[in-house]
Length: 97
Image 1 (cartoon, one colour):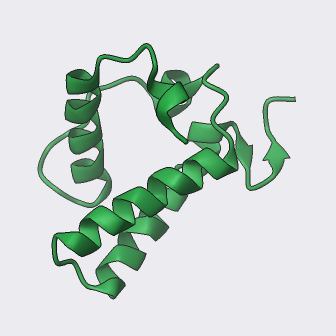
Image 2 (cartoon, helix red, strand yellow; image 1 turned 60 degrees about the horizontal axis):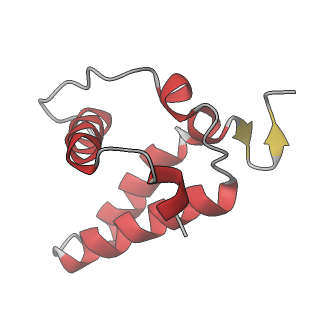
Image 3 (cartoon, rainbow, N blue to C red; image 1 turned 180 degrees about the vertical axis):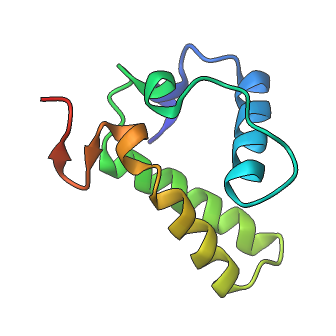
C-alpha cells in the first residue's frame, strides 16, 4: 500500500507536482519546478515494492484511458529510470549506505 508514504502530504499539491513531472518526463511542454526527486523522497522509506505499486497503478490508469500496451511499457520504462532517486537504491542495492 502506498498510502503511508503520502500521510502528511497535501494531495492537491502532490497531484500538480505529479502531473508536471510526468509531463516533463514524457517529453511534454510543462516543466517540473519541484524539488529534486531524491530530496523530495528522502526519509519516506519508499522501497522497491512501493515503487512498483505506483508504476502498476499508473499503468492501470493509462490503460483505462485507452493508451495501448506499447505506450504503457514506454511510460513505465521512462519512470523506471527514476527508481534510484525515489527509493535511494538501485533494485535491491541500498545507495544510501
